[in-house]
Image 1: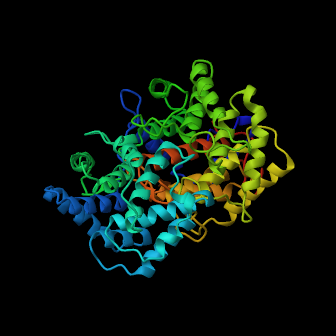
Image 2 (image 1 turned 180 degrees about the vertical axis):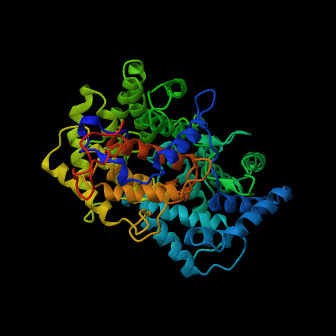
Image 3 (image 1 turned 45 degrees about the horizontal axis):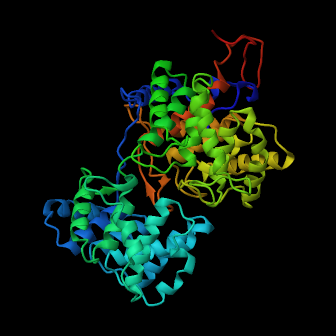
Length: 538
């Protein structure tokens, strides 16, 4: 994600092309992001409430006859405020949780919508999860639904730990619908092992609640379920809802660190961030999205590497090398990289992320060309890539675009890069912004992703137009307004506002090195449509 070396920039752009408010807006954003860095170097921002977890908590409370009357009333109020929204999945789930009538075609449409927004290799498993969600909410599924689930959709073999636990819970829940016996002892043991009073396993409330629903009718698990529900309700937000995860503190920290480094923030602050990241680095060299999780992921690990490398590649040589060794250890035989663990499917976005990290060390550059070939092979006809971990297709696009700029590239890779740039430039909205998908209304975080690509083009006009849109989405305190973007699990979006601020600051970090002060007008000297001198203003 880091900006490419200065020598790779195309000719500079004059500041007169860009909104006059850009320097002040960038300054307010920088101050706002700096203020999010804690004394220990961590960046903490609460994950906002989500309909899915709120609905599952309400259903569990009703099934257990919970005495948490105030907490229940607040969840009901939260769901009532979200039952008539624009998102099909949220409205269907909220209605089901509230006992509203949801017709089978609507549920079938919701299932299809979920599967259509995830990578092919996980489609069957996500359909099983969606059907389990309706079952947990007490909504009957038709008799044909269980038969839609492929045999491997509920097989825990070769899954990373999170998916294995989630799948074991889904297996138990759908087994009851199909008339099979309760969860076997092995599954019960696996599920119960995630439950400790006061602790959400791996920080994931969706898995936590799914496990409780799977155990709710297992003899002897009553106290486990009661304690688990109490733990979940500790994370109820002020608006009455529950979030997807307890926090994304490490992911937020690595992103803010890289954004601040790209914005030439005070090094005392960026080194404080770096020292915190070194402290929470796993023994195997990777990082997780939160320091409450044990499973490292490619996303956090690669961005941490880029940040530490950009800040000081010598001082942080050891943590960088350990992280890169962990990254290489999960590389697929196809040259690509997965999100979690060796042997799991390689993905376009994670492969692009890995390329950007591997480019920081010469000893790993022999892995870049196979990874680029994998990436080029995954590019679709319109220039985009399969769904990743963002609702916006522009997320994978900007990371793939950057992956083509950190090493010599072949004609095929250059073609991939050109197609990415062409797609982005052809889908800019009239207001200058970009949406999650072609034709969608503009949002700030998608526009920030696009601006990173536009900052590498010859024509400044699209970048200037996008910058203008971003400035309209900035609050007086410097923060940036946007819609939920990150996905977890796919395709369910969750919202941590500081991520929008970080990506916007990072985009401006890519843009500003190309901008120079406009030249001073001198009579008789012309440059384009303006009379300009050949000297830049001081």
